Image 1 (cartoon, rainbow over the protein chains, first blue to last red):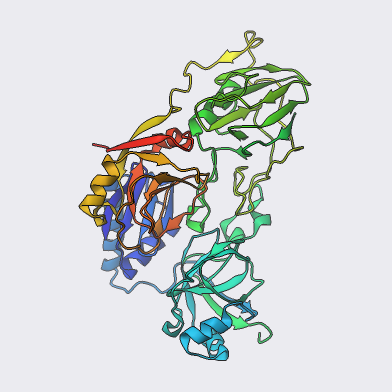
Image 2: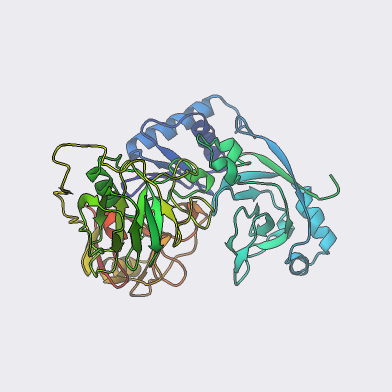
Amino acid sequence: MIVQPYGDRGVLLASLNAQQRSCLLHSLTRHLPEHCQEYVVGYDSLLLIGICVDSAQVWAEHCLAKHLSAAEGAPSLPPGARSYTVPVDYNGEDLEAIADACRLTVAEVVELHCQSIYSVHMLGFSPGFPYLQGLDPRLHLDRRRSPRNRIEPGSVAIGGPHAGIYTVASPGGWHILGHTDFQLFDLATARAVRPCAREVFSLSPGDQVRFQPKGRL
Amino acid sequence: MIEILACGSGLSLQDGGRHGWRRYGVPAGGAMDARSMALANTLLGNAPEAPLLEIVQQGAKIQILQDMWLALAGGDFCSDFATGCAQPVAAGQRLIFDKKATGRYSYLALPGGVQADSWLGSVAVDVRNGMGLPIQAGSRIMSQGAQPTIVTPQAVARRIARDQQSHIPGQEIHLKLYRGPQFTSFSSVAQQQFITNEWSVSTRSDRTGYRLEGLVLEVPASIASEPVLPGSFQVPGNGQPIITMHDGPTVGGYPKIAVLADTDLDRLAQCVPGTKLTFSWQT
């Protein structure tokens, strides 16, 4: 773990291993350290906004020490984590190109994509966009050389070691396998007087996701 | 109530932004120059972050539909209404933002703040993510009232701010930066070039990011996606830094060479394309 200031606005906890990351994230979901206004989750990092380096260091070391003294492995699911099955129409514009690039048939690509249980590693890129971990290595592909200007919300895609689902119309460089009606970002509930994160965003880090071909539910 | 006749280069509803949602991938948004937002609002007795209009120079035209008070702060773009002051306007009057002046954003506050729906606790317009009501020619903007909320017997002429917007830069600006999380991954040549070179703000700059033009820096490898805050100098493959701004993404994989001090975001936001930037390190 490297603890470094992020300008004068926060502290970046970087180079976290999986156990440290999950331990600190569990603690943050329960309550924020003193003076910390909010946090942001990175691939192997966490940003604490509003806190100073010394406090962040003390907080992180305390969390990790407490966790290690409990002498247990990192719990696989954070408190309140849920499991979801996402129905997919495997009609994506890149399906055949993916099969060619991976030297698989289209049926095998679909099979491999559905076989894994994914965990939500982080949300980012756009509101509620999940970086899903657990993609079969046979489906790892570099991002498209020229990103598309517009990808529709609900597009189920893969990029590098991750699977994901586009939540708003945006440019993007991932390969599109299919489409889903599963809503990840609900603008109507975002407009509520007191919006609740669990209602606006279907997924949180630590949640589990499976894909299933539509019609086979 | 006022009516927008023309949006000009850009006109949007903003406030202090939506905070607490970055971990869900939602940028805070909000006024690019928070200092000017607070000044316009304070002149009318509003809360500093009350919803108001952010006006990009230039070309906006606004029709006043009732006798009321307004306050303007930020860029001095309106010939009919001086910046840094609050004063009464009359029904039928027009405000035309066609004056050449330094700065990029101007803020028009209405008594009590603009009435508008919130998404995730903020009226700030985020077009890409579908939040906030976009303003078009013909849009009517309602306020909570017509009179300033601090009514004093003196509030019959106008209120003028003491601080005349000294943070709005001219053609050049010097900024003191913090070293970014990946500073040491850059070659010593790139580190040196970045801090000693003069940069200029590109025309391809908007609420998501300000691109800089100058030398081409040697760039280290991309990193695993890491949290990004407004004011971060990310250096993509082309070696030309991009400073993330309020509507920019919450995570990114480009190495960050530097980070702006929190209080300098307002100064940078007011830099128009072509503004010359020089940097030094915070000590």
